[in-house]
Image 1 (tube, rainbow, N blue to C red):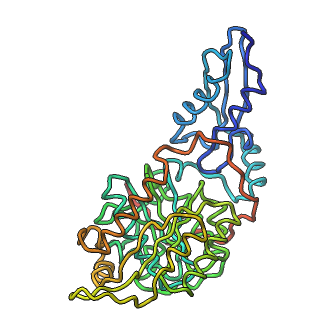
Image 2: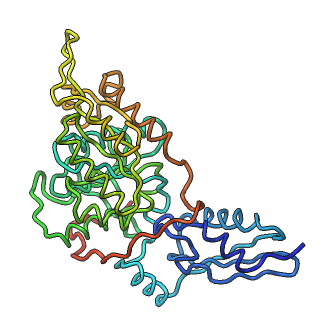
Image 3: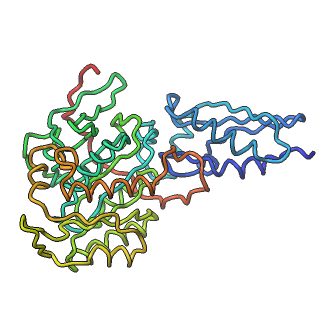
Length: 387
């Protein structure tokens, strides 16, 4: 039987993906060496971006699974080292990043950007409740408030204090009463203070939240995006590991058309649209009479246009607003309420449409366009303290 060749091994390694940088270990220059012995034994050394990579074992298993499938391959042995300073700098320059990730998002299985294109459609309410619903379904979840100017997750998830810093100098997210891990700019400024920042500072803060927070093992990290389709969304698309977009709209045609722009932006930066949620989908009186205050059918039309599923139609319900203001999501506070049932159904749709394994082995990913690194200054107000 013929021995495998280095070209065959290299081609198989293109399916091993760095979950933070979203490219294969081959394209990233992380394959240090390939040695094939006469016995068919294949020895591979992978260079990691950080010595303390928390998913080293996942990388190892992915490499073994891929290479051992080659005809003639015997035992597959995987070793690791770390990219040199010059190699890291070269990779940073090529990717257009100010620094390489060091594992903060490595164990997050799914990143979902909750977008709307416009404000006032209940995007933050959906983010908070979906995260709580996923957590209640047994899937550890986190919520990141990327709407820096209009942050609201601290109130909606019932937590608001300055986070501590781990011995490894990582920001520790706060645990909300619903079990969701939360980070928001609201934790770092005076209560209800306006954030008056220029774009580079805003981008630097979001990059810190993604790369300098110890998220740990999460099945889902939900990002509450700001309204619009501008620089923040493009920055997130560049930094995030194979993120998916969830579009929130109301039945109103005006909201539907703006939400479509958010979905089109996701397509332009090669991010998958997971589905659509229609919020404020009719109001039913205590007597059973239903009023379509914001129109009807906009969510389904948008889902049909995008060729994605309509994951839920959430009715307009006073209890949903009350729960958001009280800091305990409706899906936890009143799980049998009609709006809570619709959100829970949407959460189960998300679970059905997303993988449960870390994205380190798959078909070779298409690399994101190289863009400019985020500038600005680091957040100066993080409180250091013991874990």
